[in-house]
Length: 144
Image (tube, rainbow, N blue to C red; front, top):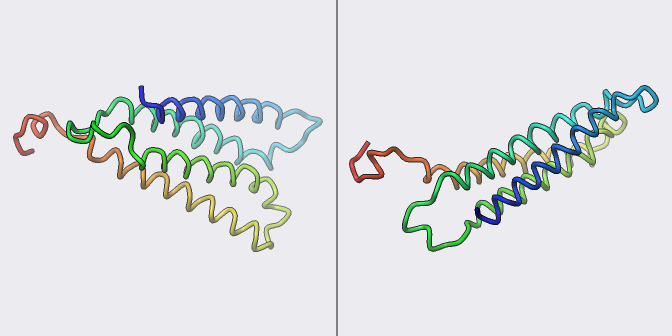
């Protein structure tokens, strides 16, 4: 299993644990912050947990072409990991404060930067995984 795959899966599990804990604590009556934290724990569970597990396992399960196997790990996979996680972390620390500082340009720029980082991560993932997905006919040398 590639190192980057282990990082994706471990990060996904950490986001899963944090998302579940946050979801349960946000609903406690004495905390009363469920509405503010709702987008945060949904992002933790969907983008943090599910997406990272899917990316990590797909990088592992779809092998590279034979001529690319000489390289141990791709720069794009690591770039995907760091772009996605930096975008998520920016979002987690900014989004709960958005209702209070919505007029502030700084908060809006941080949210936009977070979204751009996550979109860039998805684009680098697609660029990395696309060549790995090919039909059996193409693998044998027959054009599809």
